[in-house]
Amino acid sequence: MRILLTNDDGVHAPGLMALHRAFKDRHQVTVVAPDTEQSAVGHAITLTDPIRVRRLEGEDGLDGWAVSGTPADCVKLALHELLPQPPELVLSGINLGANLGVNLLYSGTVSAASEAALQGITGLAFSLGTLHRPDFSFAARFAVHLVERLPELGLPPGTPLNVNIPALAPERIKGVRLVRQSHASLRERFIRRSDPRGHVYYWQAGETMDSEDDLSLDYPAHLAGYVTVTPLRLDLTDEELLRSPTLAALDLP
Amino acid sequence: MRILLTNDDGVHAPGLMALHRAFKDRHQVTVVAPDTEQSAVGHAITLTDPIRVRRLEGEDGLDGWAVSGTPADCVKLALHELLPQPPELVLSGINLGANLGVNLLYSGTVSAASEAALQGITGLAFSLGTLHRPDFSFAARFAVHLVERLPELGLPPGTPLNVNIPALAPERIKGVRLVRQSHASLRERFIRRSDPRGHVYYWQAGETMDSEDDLSLDYPAHLAGYVTVTPLRLDLTDEELLRSPTLAALDLP
Image 1 (tube, rainbow over the protein chains, first blue to last red):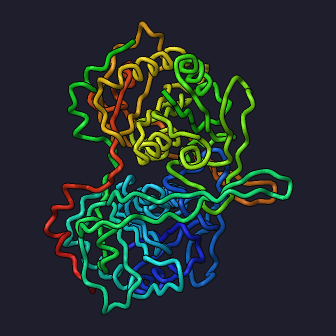
Image 2: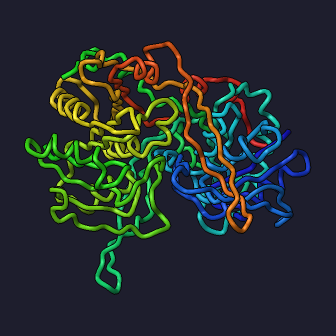
Image 3: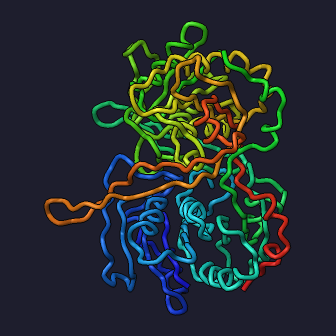
């Protein structure tokens, strides 16, 4: 298959290299990824700045381009300008850190898979549930397995999958669960500091999600040791409220 | 009401000023908005850079802060650090340019309303369907009207509304329609240039959506002259595929 490989941690991130190693011998893999870390950029695209590209000339054995933009920019630019033929599949990741619950909305990794889906191409986002001393080998093996099984899965075009792999030894992973995005609340905080000139600035600090017990949700299933898979839809319409008679009664002033 | 006012065009944008003028006498309005234009940042948040804030000391009659971050950053920082009490309502806009169809995913204006909803506060995103010579007065009047009607609308907490107002004379606006986000495809293109040193760069060029005829969708209803209102959900789970037996059969490698 023709595979486009991208991520949000940047073109030289170990998680991308792990996917590249896992797929390069069996598929035609082209990398189009951000030249610097783009975490938490969500589905941002670059409209007010020019986007620069740099050909990867065999660096780290990669074939493709480093792009001065977001993951969504990378997918768009790859499809519309850089690749001679559209890819049959877009892989995003492997992200350092899980993308679960409301964090999906902030995730550059997920947005690349979503952008692929908007363009009618299957997009798979892979994330590993750790920020420290990552071992991407099982996650990459799972990615290969998932791609091999794709023809049987019956995914309609335009459906991204969000896949999270727990950072556990393979024998401790309990299985695969098809799960819903959880709404676990975030514990957010900001760290307030002053610079030497007395000007205040803030760091947005790590967000920790509250746990729930429902294994049909992504975050609890992840914590319980399952590989989680969530099919995503990019239509944000709230269908239930769309049928609300009070809302439909809204008129002009 | 205590209202937080934000946008993605920046704290001094005319669309924000129009909302401020419309609400400031009847409500307690605090502005926390980006210090520069943040269009198309999607639901980005700033994790790898410090976020600076600057108190607005009556500039343009505004009370609040200019923030070196994204619209979602502004809402988070306002709620967790800047405001003495949480707002009862978050207004975002009025954006210069409509936010319809798949553009919702890229919209900073919509993401601010969504972020409010994630925090359990009603968020309303307003956009005006023009990029040129905007007259925000009717859009601001509609915003006031919508806010007055809120108690009757029965919106559950955590529901953002995406509101688009056509750039027409008020008497030419046909009514209000509760609509679904459309999937109209985008005509995307990149403009390729070289800098004086011969390095290639790209501009992501304006996207035009194809039209459809279905007035139950946001883009066609907007083009036909209706104010469009779409209730949004922030759970991206594809419920239909979640019940897919083939997808549920996925196992470990």
